[in-house]
Figure 1 (cartoon, rainbow, N blue to C red):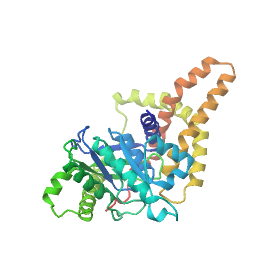
Figure 2 (figure 1 turned 45 degrees about the vertical axis):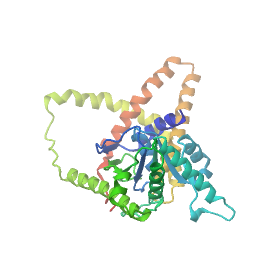
Figure 3 (figure 1 turned 60 degrees about the vertical axis):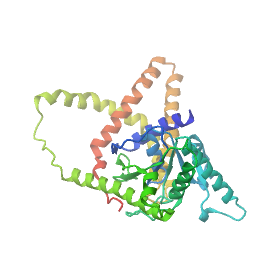
Figure 4 (figure 1 turned 180 degrees about the vertical axis):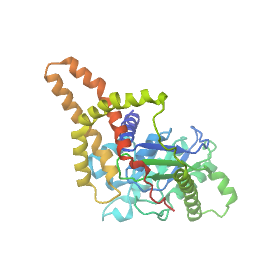
Length: 348
């Protein structure tokens, strides 16, 4: 239940921050088969949240254990049942890291054995570089260990490794775009038959190539979108006159109302994001983490204020108008600033 509630909450937050999240790839991924998802990692906390929101399966993620030191992040991690691993660079003398990591890997194996889904970012850390970093061998080791387990257990199904490519038009900019490319699933059993001399490093190289193919498909799609001709706007046809009037004389006032109702939490979120962000890799993550509680508190205060005035009708009207007015305000931002058309270089 916690997973479902958290997924709905952050899906809404992501839909507010990003103007569009497109998912491409029509590969058949069975619901009852163990799956290991892998992807590039270039947008910090947003990457797992975005995938959680858009993937149909409940997924177990891994993350560095230091994230749990942040009280707010710790609540989010527990809501999504994230498994925390200890990285060597984060360890201190006396840490029981080896035993902790072994226990985590055992739980991940059990998750796969039960037909579940696990997600690992093989790069190990988020970054802002235009090229993918070297892949760590952890995902490959997990896949190979599971395969060895499956050989001796007839109840274990073949493990599918699904490579994903993630791309953002400008990951830290409000109302920009995001893309997810689902690559061709890799049957670990079939790959082992073709590679009898398999080892974690060789499988890791294969994983990186598969993720790169997904990114290449996104790159081609972006280039095509840039070259597509756009019809010139030479006038307003009669059949478009009514919708245009509706937008200007009905939609515009509602959009303005949405802007007013959300102005205070929006400004507060921007100020906090600016204070919490140390580089280009953090703004979106900070906004998604601090934004929802700030907006919830602001709207609760507004609603309480209206109720305190003694007008139940006005308070009810506020509840009815808040969502549509907020949506129209976001659409107005898209139309005015048009930030989603900016596409930087895709990872290679």
